[in-house]
Length: 430
Image (tube, rainbow, N blue to C red; front, top):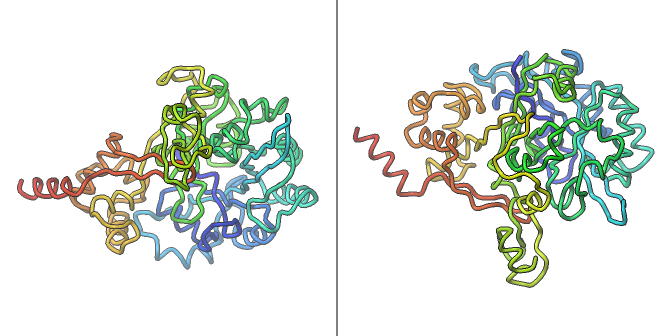
């Protein structure tokens, strides 16, 4: 069975997240986006875990669904073309920040842990509660070795999925330039065989990760890391396997299994750590410029934050363009609201964008389907010439991006003002 899964998000109990992150809104937006399996995020947080137990019920093995009384109240907000209430499932997950010292260096590693049952999640919660504070933040900060967290997770259930998060982020990742390692084995040592997948993060895509032969043994997954419900699916995974936790586990852990089909990606330049730079001085630097400036900001002389592109180049041992044997396809997408906003020349939070967005969903289906599969002529008939042209350019990668740096997201452009008028004028004339 083919479905899309977003395996790394947050709840309203994580810092700097939206209050709309509750089971109901996650269920609602999963349908609008076209996501079949959505992570709960933060599932060891005591209050959030209690809410999950109250509002979810078992479905397929290892999957959970929103109880009917909550789903029924929301169904009117979902266009009929997007309704898939029997396929939206939750999977129990959390992100944990490990901050510790190893090999004479302070390490700051984020990891996503996915559990197969409430019993397993509760067992992990009890163990971690004895180690550190899991109540103050949905993504707890624990002073334990990432390897020890992996070991603890496997003790709770050997089928726990443990995925190092956004592996290139400078400050908080296993290969990050500021606090990571130079290899996965250096971090997890003899337990590395229990790592089946790595999360590429918003600032890198599979093409960049294929540059490292050491990563060939792992599947490359992508997730939204959503801090609000509307951000679900901005990156996600495509599976074609048994619709259950075990099906997904086999797809990621068994090298012979073909159930993991690929990923949906940001354009990596949009990610907020793609280039090097210094946010305080609004200085964006290509890695070659960083080398020329000896790692210092040309404006203030302080060290710049070395981004993902430079870090990949530092560790790469394969030329760009080569693929490992287990490489899966990927698709670079831009959010539909962003495309509409670009086409109309307005902000993406405007009422005009929301109106067109809803019209498109009602007529054409869920967002990811529109972005990837709906014929352009159908999009043109509903949303107009310029929106259809925007989708075409996105599909072909014909976009212009000012790369993100030092915590600032990149800015993407599909049109300029005069182009919009030309496209509208030409197509109106004909």
